[in-house]
Amino acid sequence: MTQEHTCFITQKPSLSVSHVTLKPDNFVLSFLQHTQDISSWFKYQSSIAAMAVTKLYVVYYSLYRHVEIMAREVQRGANSVQDVEATLWQVPETLSDTILQKMKAPAKAADVPEIRPEQLLEADGFLFGFPSRFGVMAAQFKAFFDATNDLWEHQALAGKPAGIFWSTGFHGGGQELTALTAITQLAHHGMIFVPLGYTFGSGMFEMNEVKGGSSYGAGTYAADGSREPTELELQQAFYQGKYVAEITKKLENKPLAS
Image (cartoon, rainbow, N blue to C red; front, side, top):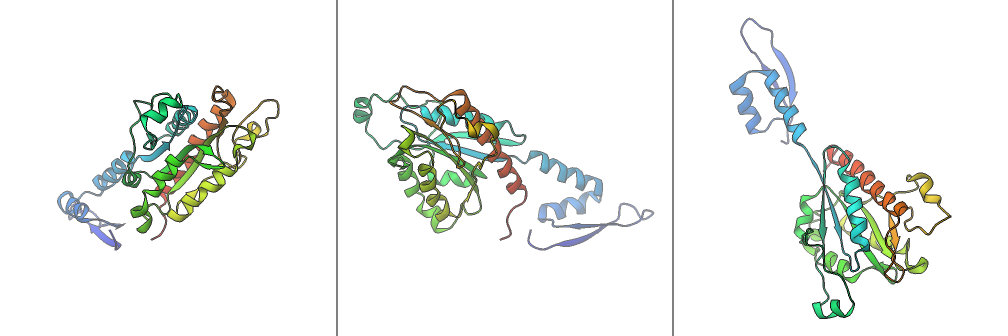
């Protein structure tokens, strides 16, 4: 649908002509020619709008389940937005089973499929989650981004919004740096980084308990591995999912000019 057309539709000789400005494809032109009914056209448009669903992919890597727990809460938040469908995906593991056993890593979530780079094309927006390794994303997630060369070459993800969430060991583990260094991946793809800012409200200023996250997105602390995300951290994860979903929905309904 590249050109704007003006259609004049007459229902009966005795009725006045209705003037409508449309951008019809061949199907719609055929539809109008056979029905000669403008009310059916509007019903058709309404049904198409009702079927429109904004697809958000929550893609994560998790070694000891901290990021997985956050990802599920992010998904819940995104799915709380009407007409948004958020799906969980995990990137492939690069460590051998022998190494994972020595590291006492739990089994991967059986209900979350692995994603291939080309499947990113299906989504309208993203939330990427990963643990920190020396202030940058885990190598497994970097390997996944490294495999998106074809998408980068064609700038196939340009204009799509994306948020980031993470897990770090301690305070010095990159609650801001991990997100900051991850933005380079989004920038090269032309994706739109969606930070939280301080929209989470008073939870951003909590000083009476240890809390992960920052203006870049939601986060948690793993400590020695025994610590799990707190209620406040999960609330921020839920909020981030909802927040990014709402923005993705707005952008999906108002596409950027080509």
